[in-house]
Figure 1 (cartoon, helix red, strand yellow):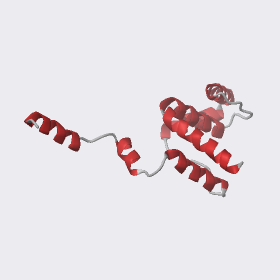
Figure 2 (cartoon, rainbow, N blue to C red):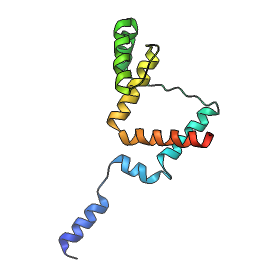
Figure 3 (cartoon, rainbow, N blue to C red):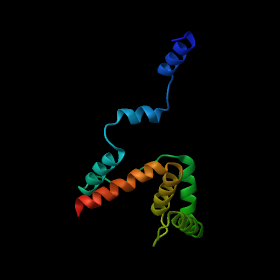
Figure 4 (cartoon, rainbow, N blue to C red):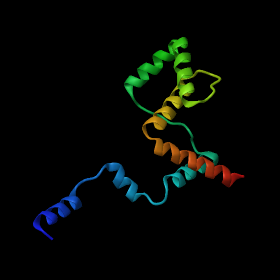
Length: 126
């Protein structure tokens, strides 16, 4: 090997990758299998709520709750984007839809893993 090739090989060995790449290598199995386990735990009675701490979002969602027409419009827009029907425009529904749309748009591969896990879980339960 030439000196340049040695340097490039050493550089490749020591170069940091994305944090998600390293995490993916460390996690055994498929993500959808882990999602299935979480779905099973939820079915068994484990908690299924989420909590986030964000001042800006808390202010926005708090204001929307006080402005019913704006809340209704936001929920309707998100529901259309998610291709879902919504009966009640609530803060919970707004948060749920916003998270779904965000994941679908920004990380479609994660969303697909969730869908695969839900399908596998449904087959398992059938």
